[in-house]
Image (cartoon, one colour):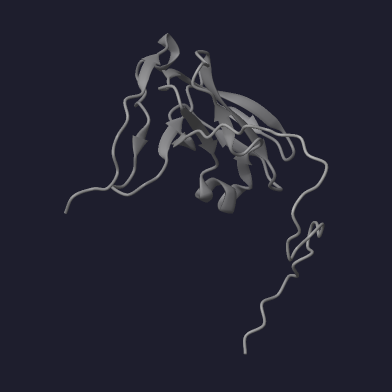
Length: 158
């Protein structure tokens, strides 16, 4: 079987505090996100409601026209209420600082992160740039100006 996924080259610089940790990796053949791990010097306990920027020990150079999206890991969110605060976090192609994961504990118990724990996933995606044009009118749609919840909460099954 031929994969329809075409890899792009993303250069990674491993910082000294991550020398023994794995580079981002895809857990399965069809995974969209590569796992990021915590490059912590010491365990980090997040109390309920607490947040922290967790280092990965990596810097990346994305090709022009791409971004990296940092997303939560579903298992951490489901089991512990631990998620990425600004999900998805965006890493722009021209950023060269350390990749940090802004974690928040939305659960009801403390959660301890340890060195090498898989804390988030990184999805590489193409970027589209908009050409914004000011206008005085917009076309009509079926939804119109209906905002949050305006399309209902239930689907009726006939």
